[in-house]
Image (cartoon, rainbow, N blue to C red; front, side, top):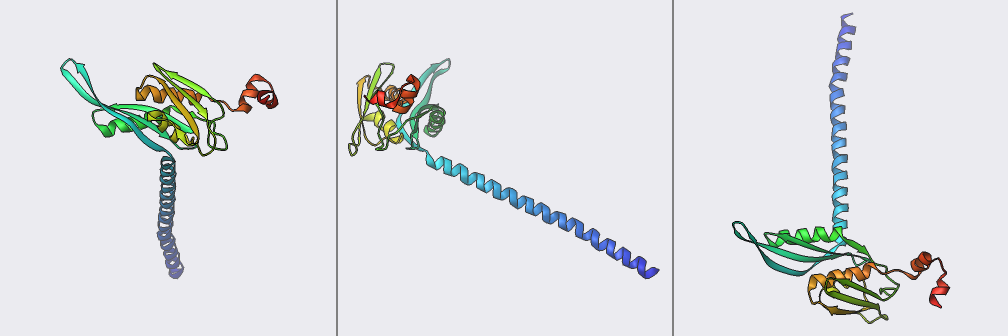
Length: 208
């Protein structure tokens, strides 16, 4: 009897010691799985960020008169795009240049525009955009033409992924207004297929 009791006690003690060890191994596996998921999410976030390109159009020092005197800050105009038909213009203000650029990038990603591109990396039709006193005219070009534009308009077109286009600035020379006018012109672009669908006609009638 004593032998059987001692054996049962030994088996109970051995099984009891194995249970917490197994639970610890499960917890370690769960922790490793969580770490792997976190690493995958970080990699995906880095890949998404790497798709976007950022270009600074202008950085200006701005002074604002307040009750205690003048408050100095910086204003940054940023153009964000992935060169695949998405582009945005943002403005950021902060006490330092780095903070202003970060805010400008965040603001640009909030105001993205989808641009329809043709096979030769051009635009489907002529478009005209206006913002304030600035007016911009853009029109498609043949392959090999390149981006014929200047200033902030060129930056917007390049980050949108347009490689063959003609653009003309009309009116104001302000970089922000010109960039926003180019954004308006790009947002008004429609493909021939979409135009035919909106008008309820066939593509042959549009081309004729």
